[in-house]
Image 1 (cartoon, rainbow, N blue to C red):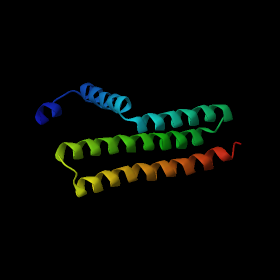
Image 2 (image 1 turned 60 degrees about the vertical axis):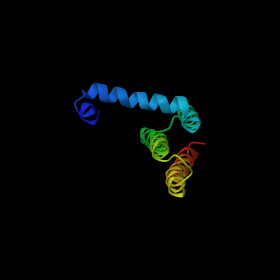
Image 3 (image 1 turned 180 degrees about the vertical axis):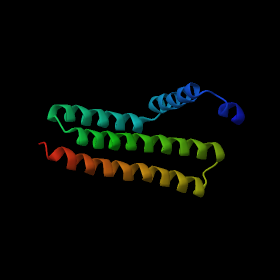
Image 4 (image 1 turned 90 degrees about the horizontal axis):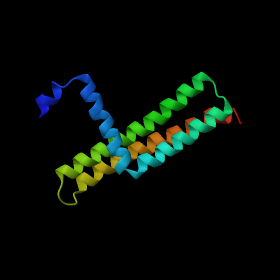
Length: 120
C-alpha cells in the first residue's frame, strides 16, 4: 500500500487530502466550530473593509487553527489505532496534541482582536 501511494499522481494525492478534510469536517465537532468562527471573522472583515495585509494575516490565522485541528485529529486517530486500552502515554500524547490546538486558537483570537480592533 505504501509504495502504491507513492506512485499515485499528484491529482489523486490531492483528492485523498480533500477526502481527509471532508472526513474531519463530517466527524469532528471541534473543526466545524472553528470553521464557523473563521467564517464569522471573514464576514466581519468584509463588513469592516480591512486592508489586504490584514486579510492575509487573518486568513493565515484561520488556516493555522484548522490545520492544527486536522493534525490533532490525525494524531488522535493514530493513537487510537495503536492502543486498545487506556494508556497513560496515549493520554499524554492526545493531551499534548489538543494543547497545540488550544495554543494556536489563543494566538488566533489575540491576533484577530489586534487586527480587527483598529477597524472598530
